[in-house]
Length: 221
Image 1 (cartoon, rainbow, N blue to C red):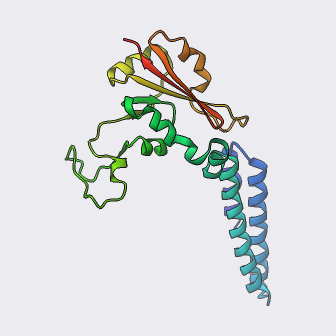
Image 2 (image 1 turned 45 degrees about the vertical axis):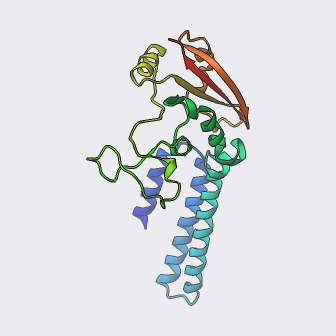
Image 3 (image 1 turned 60 degrees about the horizontal axis):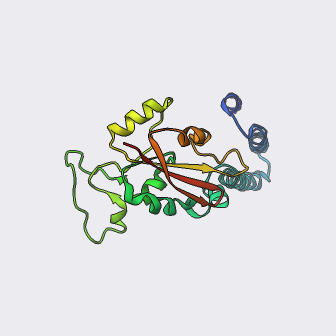
């Protein structure tokens, strides 16, 4: 038990947020373990009730932590609250669908799903394959292995321009969060002014959505 306490305590050194909350949760759990261990060693009649109570408490705390993280951080609940259902990625995809391939500062597979760019690789030696008609939502998958969405990083806009040309990307989709919560931000949104002043980008559309604005640029040849 002492080894477990040391392990948990050392793990706190690597935490970067909600530290007090996590210390309190781990303290309650460890105190419960000590109480159960004490009564178990002394063959107390109430040890079974204590074990059951501890398990219930542990489950409740675990659920509370998961719910809090999902709500406070950009989890499923938090994203729904700040940016709408599925962060309205379906609407962004609809606006960009006719101009693929694109570069976007949206990370994660959810946007790729709506852009029909989820690669499936059952047979690595085959370049493409056909799914059976009965496979649900098969049209949402990318079976030809041609990337439709890129989200590569960059430091200099010269590098960004070169990579766009290399990948033959003609459309850039930049999403800027207007949420007051600093946790809900998109990569590169702080460089909006630079995007607007790049001579190789021309702003074609500006769409206001829930707590975010979508900027769609076209490359200027």
